[in-house]
Image 1 (tube, rainbow, N blue to C red):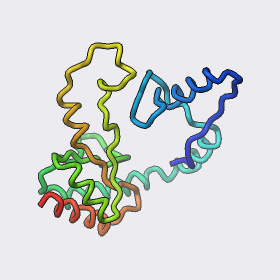
Image 2 (image 1 turned 90 degrees about the horizontal axis):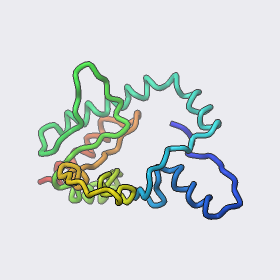
Image 3 (image 1 turned 180 degrees about the horizontal axis):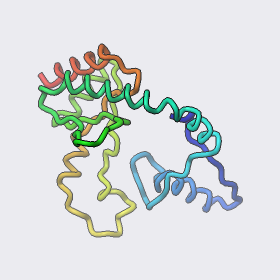
Length: 176
């Protein structure tokens, strides 16, 4: 990846500056809360230069994450949870390795107690975001359920099988 987010706008209008802060970040002024439709507008030339230099290594990065995903599948496949789907003819790059587990909060707490990072990305379903408050509230029971059950596990190209096994053992113990 790059070395961080960045970018710059200059204005003397405080109101405009505040509005642009949210618009540049998907319409979000507070993490996971989207008040309006916005954009992902944070990439500058330095970031582009860094990413261009790393591009030749992308196949190795993707391969490392695919290997880690295969280890997760081996170590977690027999548990009462849902692993990321695979589709014939396509190759997942596993930017995230997100599982679906009914006892998500218990599993997350167990991982945290062992010093293992995990994350709940997008805990508020899109149809419940303030950005869509002027529309009739959609009934999306699957999205609501997923928001309460998804958990992203550690995922990076250098993840070892021993590290995956430790994550899996912690999850196995949490699920009893």
